[in-house]
Image (cartoon, rainbow, N blue to C red; front, side, top):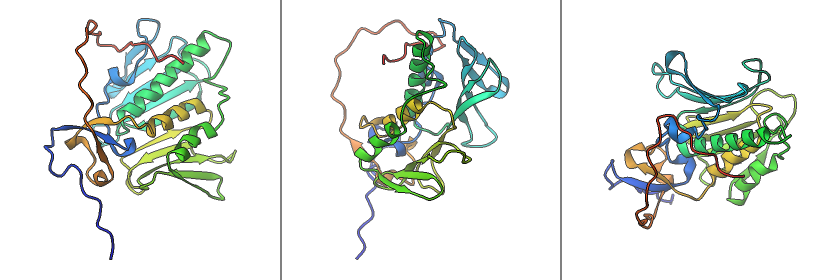
Length: 265
C-alpha cells in the first residue's frame, strides 16, 4: 500500500493569515520591495536611477557595480533582479547574477547585503574581491550537505545538490571552459520551478555562498497563506509563532530611498 500524501498544513487557515514557514526555497516570493532588497547607502555616493519601461537601477560610486529591477508586465512572472559588474564604468560586463522576481525576498536581501559588504571592504582596502574572489566553491555547497541535501556528479562537469524533498536544487558547473552559469539554483519542481537564480563565470563565490546560507537558514519566513505556492505547500511546515517582543522606541521613518548600513563582516 502506498503511503498517504503529505497533508496540506494550510488547508484550514484563512488565506490572509500570516504564518512562519520552512523550508525557504518553497515559501514563495514574499514582499520584495526596493527598501527590503537594496540596503545601499544612497546618502554616500550610491545612485538610484529610474530607467526606461519601469526599470530601476542602483549604481555604486565607481559606476562599475550596479543592480537592477526590470519589470515585465506583459509577461507574467518574468520580472527579474540583476546584479552586474563592469570592467570599466558602463563598459563590458565582467560578471552577472540574475534572479527571477519570484525568488524569496529574504534570499535577495541577503545577497545584496553581502554585495555591499564586499564593495565596502574592497573600497577601504587593497583587496579586489568583486573581481578576484578567493573563496573556494566548497563554501557554497558544504552547508547544503550538512543540512541533508543529496549530492550527485555527472560527466558533463556539473554536480547537483537536492533538498530532502527534491523540490529545488543547486547546480555547480565545476568544469572550466564549459558554457552556462557556474551556479544555478531553483525552487519547486525542476520542470516548472517557482524561481531560478544564476551566477555567471567570474561572479564572486562569496555571493553564491551568501545565497546558499540564506537558502538553508532555519529562520522561518513570514508569509500570508495566499502567498504560498499551492503545488508544493504540502512540503512546507508551519513554525511555531514567535514569542511577543516588548515594545521598543522606533527610529524616525526612513526616506523613500533605502539606505541602512550593510551587516558587518
